[in-house]
Image 1 (cartoon, rainbow, N blue to C red):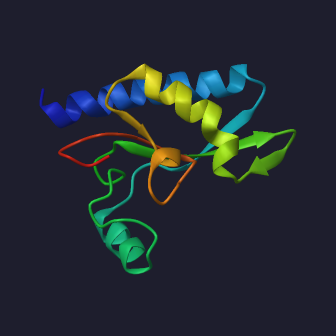
Image 2 (image 1 turned 90 degrees about the vertical axis):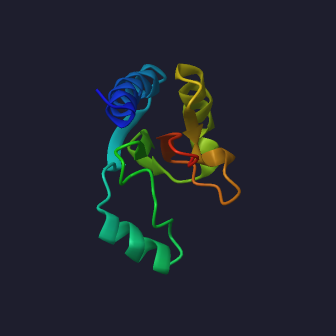
Length: 115
């Protein structure tokens, strides 16, 4: 088994734990985007919405939608509790709320120098 496959499996297990954690705190959660084809990543990058070498393309990133009382939460601060928990699951995990251009609903695992 290669390094990428090992990380993808660990990422998937961590994502399942994160979703359960979010639910345990009284929130609902849905997947927004997990896998992103490379052509889509290139298009997003041209639009200023991501990078062409996105970890979504490697299966190591997920964007989540968190809801409270049926309302979709959009602010990075709304995701802080999940981001802080995410980082405790694996030293390679990164939360988009810590990025220079904050992306609070983004959860990823570092790979080949990308966060």
